[in-house]
Amino acid sequence: MARGPLMIIGGAEDKLRKRVILRDFVAASGGADARIAVIPTASSLGAEVVEVYDALFRREGAAEVVAIRPESREDAHDPVLVKTLADATGIFMTGGNQLKLSAIVCGTPLGDAIVEAHERGVVVAGTSAGASIQSSHMVAFGVGGSTPKQRMTQVAAGLGLLRSSVIDQHFDQRNRYGRLLMIVAQSPQLLGIGVDEDTAAIVAHEVGADGVEREVLRVRGRGAVTIFDPARITTNAYDARRSDPLLASGVVLHVLPEGSAFDLTARELLPLAAEAEPGLAEAGHDLRQLARDIAAADASPTTLKRRMARLQKRKKDDPAPPTDGPSS
Image (cartoon, helix red, strand yellow):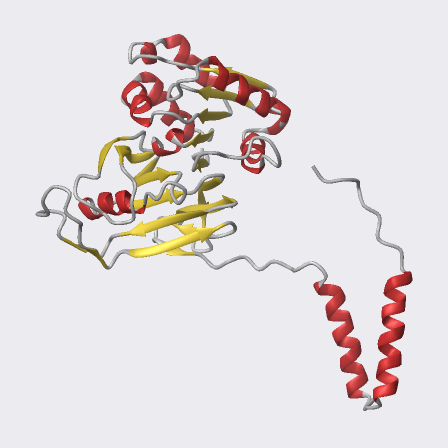
């Protein structure tokens, strides 16, 4: 069975208006048949955060929402909690303290159950802290800033759903470029992925025309996903002293807005899908009519003016096409 998609959300996803990312998550989890497990361990808000997501997911049509909130590693060994994931079609990890989430969940039966659910096709999503824990390596804590400096952040183990990578969130809003650069300078085998707020990096396994399965990241939301590829980096991270700025030369930078797709396996940008612009067909009709006029040697400015006036009058007199009602 194919592995389920990952939804890596940079935090502060829209919960009040369009709710595009949350709606996509519910739809990917099965829509009206969705059974969603919310893991709020990272959050300090307790039951309140579960109530918020319960209401949001049910409003988007989910059939069932359950909370799984271990507060210790002992809780994460509870077979009753672990069994709750057996019927889940979607798993959602909330924001908060990612080091707390990692310390309680990773390397426990509950953490193993999340990985197993992903392997059998369940959608695994997380926002903020719940995004960071999905990678093999995770930012534990650290300061912001544009310049990478020695020891400006610490790294912990994540769940490893996305291998050979490190994920950071609230990326542009909290200026976390420097700390992600520091990590990839120290560990050039990792791909650095920074996700902006109200933005999701959606990772799925896709089979290309060549029959090869690849991990493909697609961007959804109002921000961007930034990728640092340090495969050919030149750095002094191995001997820089405490708090020194780091040399990081040759890092390949990708800034991916909504609609972009990136092949994580080959580490290369995929071609953008062509989209028809609204009104393009009508504009094409007008251009074809004008071309016919020119081909017919209709060179009289007066005649052309009359033709354009008739065209504008037809557009004005034609009633607007019916609609299906206001969009949600």
